[in-house]
Amino acid sequence: MSADPNRLAKRNAVTLGLAGSFVQGTAPICISLGGLAGVYLLGDSSPYVTAPVTSYNVGVALGALPAAMLMRKVGRRYGFMSGSMVGLMAAGVATLGLFQANIFIFCLGLAMFGINGSFAQQYRFAAADEGTADFKPKAISWVLAGGILAAIIGPQTAIYFKDMFLPVEFAGAFFAGGFLAIIGMIILSFLKFEKPQKPDPEVVEDTGRPLSVIMAQPKFIVALLCAVGSYSLMSFVMTGAPLAMVACGISTENATLGIQWHVMAMFGPSFFTGNLIARFGKERIVATGLLLLVVCAIVSLSGLELWRFWLALVLLGVGWNFGFIGATAMLTETYEPNEKSKAQGAHDFVLFTSVAIGSLMSGITLNAYGWEMINYVVFPAVGLCLAGLLWLNLQQRSKKAV
Image (tube, rainbow, N blue to C red; front, side, top):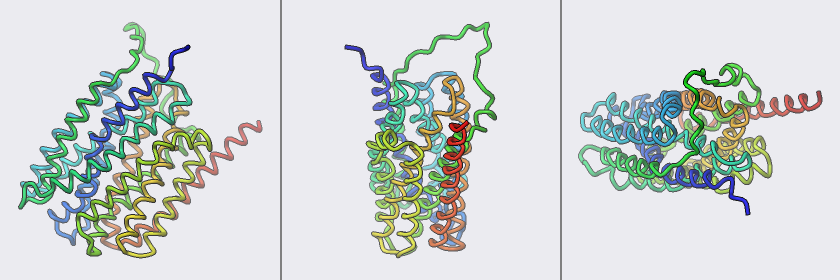
């Protein structure tokens, strides 16, 4: 009886998923309370109340390339643990910013949480490093399934600890985020990867094709376009949702619970998304996810009741899951193992720069044009991504015909 070739890959995927449930638990805290803390610090008339959430996404974008380079030097295990250490320091800085009523210090703290998030975003790539090609989409799904626990841990931490340091609002939630980073760091210490053969120091390491060549491939372009579209639209709508709910008279607790349902919907389908990709193909699952984003916008535009906000956020989460996991699986087919660090780092830099812009524009759009305009933006953005998938399909068909 032959040994399971995916044994180590399965162990790492479970470990990364469990670690992610704590490390990524800080993301719902930053997203659900970041904008509300912005109102607390700047006043509800400022168009920049979502600047803290944008700072989080900027941190993810800025940390993408350094995270990839650090892990190339010290390995995935120690690299991921270093990211959690940044998350621990972020908790102190963000809490200090609220105590000092200083928006710049607070935004710095959330940017540091974002840098921690940039390491966590690499979990899905690390899970796909080991095992067979057929297991890669499942490994990515297993890792993202850890977000189900994050969807519970993060918002519940925000709800139960946000008033711990009253009269300084929200400080307790961000302080508690440091403990989530510590737990994640302990879990990450159990990671184990196959040790690569040490290169001869006399030989210059071959890192494969130039990055420009890798990124010029039609599949890379469309995978990046769909990842950017899925994630940026999700960030754009999600960032504005808690502010819109509170503006409609919905309580902070219900707005935070809405984000909890949303994050659970983001990661819940991960248990079967990999199987759906294996059965129907990556491109079809991506297209399905994009169409769910359209349905989300339609529900949001149909009314302002609490259940409509929550249903729209659930649809937004499932649409992101299908679109993002499918696009990530497409991306893994565009580079060789020796090219993965630069390809993944460049991909995530572009991705999270776009996500950061989306979260900033959410606050500006909400302040200037209202909740409806946020949802109208979904339609042309999804149309562009679907056009990209159609173009890729035509490219692949013409290539086969030659």
